[in-house]
Length: 362
Image (cartoon, rainbow, N blue to C red):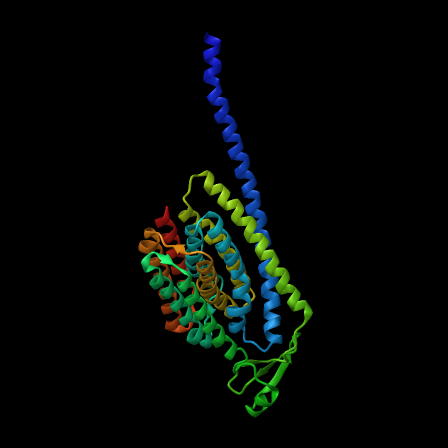
């Protein structure tokens, strides 16, 4: 009788020990998956920024425009895939949380850390034409979500605004900086050097360097963009898979997973691309990447998701997540408008704000 009781008493312990071993093994595997994903994301970001930089010169685009189009749209691809798939497979709360959390992370974490690496100048065109669309996208999301649902009509509205934004981009893609040699000569400037993408640097009489573009696209630049995008997609998938598995073992809710793990995971391409751009001295890419990504996240990703299936807006999202999104968006707009720059102090404030946001979610 005693031996039977001892065995019976040991059985739960054995089961618990086995469960703990499985949990530890799963967590360790998830950590490796996260690490692999992070490495792939960095490599993808490096390839994407390098290819997009040269490609934009070959096409006669300014860095600000390229950052808010080529790089931003490419790094938003993970949000599009993850937002739609998670919305269909796990419920729209997860997808909506990933988008809102990603936009907050883009401003607080991505732009903040990039500014800590190097102060970021904000191009006049970005401030005048692109930043307002970022604010409009955030306010439009909050306004349309007040009734608790984003339906197909709301999705169409998002896509119509996206079409207007795209029209503005295309109408200013060449712009004033893409001048020719005759304009430089007329301005009294002198040619200074060459570019592998067919452009030359010239110095105008005001002492500012201007890029003169030859509008020649190299296959290698396109290859860098495509390879970078592929690595970003695979890396983001691995990272999110590992992080989500770990948090689900800890009993986290879908909303928390969306606002943290999925949001952070889908923002890592933007983080990697913006940090690489900042280190390489391409501040306009860093700023344009964040601004463009936040626009595409709402207008493109949620637009497509809402058309496929109605998106439910939980009460907690309307009372906390949306106000935080508006606060971060309008806050960074005010910072940019104040001095056309995001300084290191501003970066520290943004990172601190994101840490507070994360703390309030716990």
